Image 1: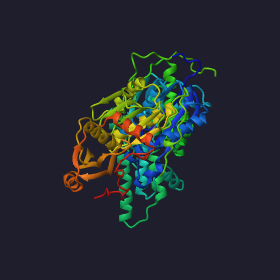
Image 2: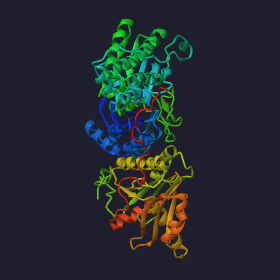
Image 3: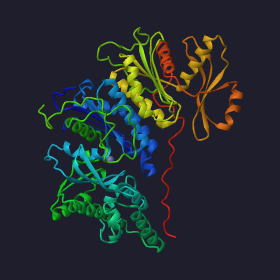
Image 4: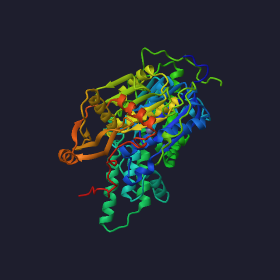
Length: 370
Length: 238
Ligand SMILES: [Zn+2]
């Protein structure tokens, strides 16, 4: 296959509750179409895997149609199909994997099966207003499904996991604490709203895995379940004593504990690895307090922070397409058709099932003129 | 009847053939079913089987379906329709086939034809009995529905369109109750161990010829998602 221009890639993302179809031409974003089943999960207080998988199946074709229309391209122009193989919810991932294979076989086009977490990093290169992504960079990815700290030496070939959550993802902690405070789902924006009038220093909630004794084996890992329990206990004790619960202060103090531990560990990684760059990604980056604290403290530490546009921070297909476009540009061969969904895919596996017998698309300049 | 977007107007194929009219002489149907194992087939209008691919592995649908589909698509390069087995079957596996089939149809610009998976099994039984001149009694196609339940559909003969006469749509039954239910319905029990994608495609071909729809666009889940509404958080203090 010889590509005369930057590759036109359609990306499919179904790892959690967003059905994402993205279309990119190299590093140029043409469509970022997202159908979310979030509302269907609201009454359950969290993502229900079966509900999410059913919703993906129904949303896929309308989303593909909408993405093609927005991008102004037709399917026969597509150079490659990309899909999230993992990590994520197995049943949800499988809907995307099936669809991607059906589409790739129908179009007789190469298929790239990629890593969702690395996709979050790739979202950054679609930001036309940002400069070139410099390596190495530390990346902090925070969402309802994951909380990971990565060292990225090269997007397509060298991503190292420094640490991740040992229990709940940060976004999940927001959802659970929101429920404790009788706030609706999703918890992030609700906690934010409640915290606006609160004092973040009112209650000193614990910072998980931050003791000196944790530094040996969990320096870059996270834990939020202890924090959630501490909030629950504090609220119960207040109620037992017949005192009104100061929701604003609890929300602000809880949020501060999450933000503090995230930013502290990320900047610690920057310092220890001598990397003055921090990339933020994942849906929880929508939290303004997290962005503000990260920017303020990073500035103090001499670390430059990159934050992709928020619509590219939440789960989406454009980041999956962007990662595949980078893989193609770096000469990687497509995946075989024999991969599946891998709910625990390690971040070191940037691409899954690269086909040793396939021909690599012709390497391209990273930013081909169109 | 509610018509889903998937079932809308056939788009012309890129090469201008495959108009996809029912009964069009060039009709070639790709059939896909992942309700019980993974099966992909292709048949011509006259019923000739161009490809019949399957994996016995009860799991691994997502892993195997791409290669099976590619082989079937090579044997039938310009399909006019994609027939989909809509279940019942374990949800996760069932969805792989439906997602693959729908996306393949989008990629080729051809319409999908949903078929109850049990109809494919029933058609196979009726045709094989017809071949040997055996009278087929009223029978039930039975598949495992997990959670100590079976899914079953009851059939009684074949109609003038060459389609199984389904007298009871797919229904769940506790395992222990099934035989009593079938005795009451006067139906012999047929436990299906696989679903033939060729039979799914053939049922679709006959339905198209007759201008009939065998299933809606919703998968035959038969069960609501297994969820519990959010309850009050558990106490953590003693
Ligand atoms: Zn994500």
